[in-house]
Amino acid sequence: MTPLHVDNVSKTYRQGDRVVEALRGVTLDVARGQFVAIMGASGSGKSTLLHLTAGLTKAETGGVYINGQDLGKMNDAQLTRFRRDQIGLVFQSFNLIPTLSAEDNILLPVRLARKMTDADHRRVEELIDLLGIGPRRHHKPDALSGGEQQRVAIGRALINDPAVILADEPTGNLDSVNSRSVCELLRDLCRLHGKTIVMVTHEPSVAAYANDVAVIKDGKVVDSFSTESTPDQQSLAARYQSAIGPK
Ligand SMILES: Nc1ncnc2c1ncn2[C@@H]1O[C@H](COP(=O)(O)OP(=O)(O)OP(=O)(O)O)[C@@H](O)[C@H]1O
Ligand SMILES: [Mg+2]
Image (spheres, rainbow, N blue to C red):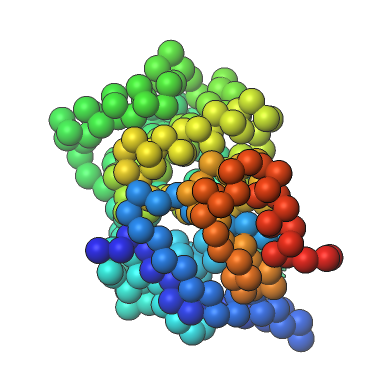
């Protein structure tokens, strides 16, 4: 089963008499264990695509299928449950609960879903180890660095072992050292743990960690390529620039 199939989605926003065609027929297929970077300039439709994929907004035309399930056929309650179980969301701004420890933030989706099982206890131990936040597990978010906070947010996205992880500019609030470590973590989650990740970024240095890149311009995919064809950051940046063209 394909973890993610986005089929020809379109989305228009209307505000008063302003009409914005944010997405104009985008198709995206993501295989299991694939790490895809969505690149594009500000306003090109990247977040809109990610929000549609997460079922946070609905497409006017086309459909989103996660593990073969059509998000468009679900009602709000089904969608909320499906999102909790099958989609791991990571945002630029971490969105952690300030009053909960790192460990309790990771466990939040479990606590909302069910009584903690032994398997959940084992899983949180594995994740804390994988994320390298053992000594920090009892700290609240304000006592963690940005990189540690984003690791906790990634742990929270992983705790229910979702079909796909969707990350919107996950390194956008991080310095270069923390950004690199979060990118390495995402890459290892794919390479070593078979996770499927879609990440929005406009930074070639971040996109270089993915296996594949899809470039969006004015709500359309204008280029897609494997990062094997752009072995260094400069060649990836050059290909991206030529895809989005002059401003
Ligand atoms: N809720 C909304 N209401 C009206 N217009 C919106 C809304 N959300 C996004 N847009 C518009 O849709 C277009 C695409 O926005 P989107 O947020 O998807 O871009 P983006 O590629 O994520 O940009 P950025 O890199 O700045 O985050 C923009 O023109 C934006 O102004
Ligand atoms: Mg955005």
